[in-house]
Structures are given as structure tokens and as C-alpha cells.
Image 1 (cartoon, one colour):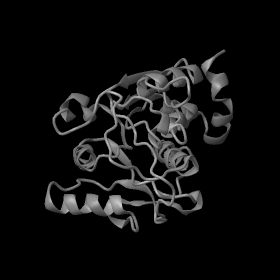
Image 2 (cartoon, helix red, strand yellow):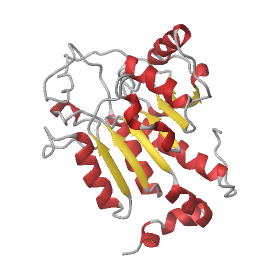
Image 3 (cartoon, rainbow, N blue to C red):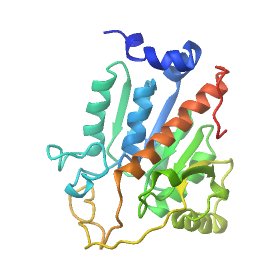
Amino acid sequence: MEYNELFARTELLIGREAMQSLATKKVILFGVGGVGSWCAEGLIRSGIMHLTIVDSDKVAVANSNRQLPATTQTIGQLKVEVLKKRLQEINPFATINAIPEIYSAGSSSSFQLEQYDYVIDAIDSLAHKTHLLTAASESGATVFSSMGAALKIDPQQIRVAEFWKVRGCKLASALRDRLRKGAKLQKPILCVYSEERLSNIGTEALPDADEKGSFRKAQTNGTMVQVTAVFGFTLSGLVIQDIMKNGNSGNQSPFL
């Protein structure tokens, strides 16, 4: 098996120049849960060769309905390690760096965002997300972010917009409130979002486990894979289309 064989059909669509550009870009992805895990898969299957994945969580039973690393065989294992193994089986030529840590204001400098071409935000914590978007906007990287994917069931309502133009998303609204009071974003950031807003109608599900395997939430909102996966694949598509556009491959993203 050779590298070219893996991506023969991709090259037919986007061309050799774009494939060569994909292979040189460095991407860091924060959060490999219901959205981020599918984003990682989309990136590696598209030809990204340098990917760093960051997440401190372990696989929990309640992840099984929506997260790529979650199976009955991986419960209790670190998500980044499970995902790294899968991604390397897809493309053994790729360099996958798995970091089982939490991004926070205190740990931010250790990730050296300036060394990446793309920063992808797929984390849930409002405080950490606010800091990441602010720090990433100050780096030279292009930044893409996922807004809230819970309490939604219709993938046809998923959209892409610049951060300040996102509507109908509580997470985006909360982020804007924080950013108006603190540090400002230094560049535009495209976000994946949906205006759909449902309510939980079933019994309360088990919350996700933290990095030590213990529950960390009093309750959780319902989520489904047909939405979280499309969020993730859309994020990966934004990266690929941006590389194609900047590489002058002849095709351009409808979003950029």
C-alpha cells in the first residue's frame, strides 16, 4: 500500500496541488467528543497528515450514541488514545499527536498555537472555549469553531456563519456576552451551528465521565449522532476548503 493509493479519489476531485498542500498543514483539534471525533476522522480521511488532538476525557457508556471512539470495548479508555489508534489505522503515514489534557487559561501556553496552520475548537466548557477562541484569534492560525450541538435532531438545519453572525444558539450568545466584557477576537472565526432548539422529554440520561472516570454534571442534554457528526464533518470540510482556496486549486468553498 502506498500513500497515493489512499487518496486517489480525493485527488481526482481536488487535484494534486491541493493534496500536497493538505499534507503540509498542521492542525490542532481541541475536544474529540460528539463533534470533534468526527472532525478528526474527516480530516485524516481527506489527507491531513499532521494532526494534534487534545482531550482529557475517558470514554463513558453515555458517549456511545454519538462519539466515534465510544464502543463497548473502549469504555474507560482515554478518548484521544482510542481515536489515535483508529486514525493511524486509516492512514499509517499520518502523524497523530494525542494530548490527554484540558485546555485552560493555565495550560494554554503549553499548546503553542502559533505553530499550527489551523486551530479547531470543539470543546464544551464556556470558560475554556472563550479563552481558546481569544488566544487562537491572536495566533497566525485560521480558526474554526463548533457551537452547541445538543438539543437538536435535524441535520438539515446546520449552518455556517462568522461568530458574530451566529443566531439562535445559546452557547454562541453566552460566548458573545463574555467576549464583550473581556478580550476581543482579533480575526473573524467561522462557526458551525444550528438554530434548532428542542427540549429534553425523556428521563435524565447519565452524564459524561470526567478524566478520572467520575461523573461531573448534575444533568445532561440530549444529543444525537446525525447532528454531532455533521457538525464535525462540516468543521473538517471548512479546513479542506480553506486549504483548497488558498492553494489556488480551482475550486472554492461556498462559505469562504
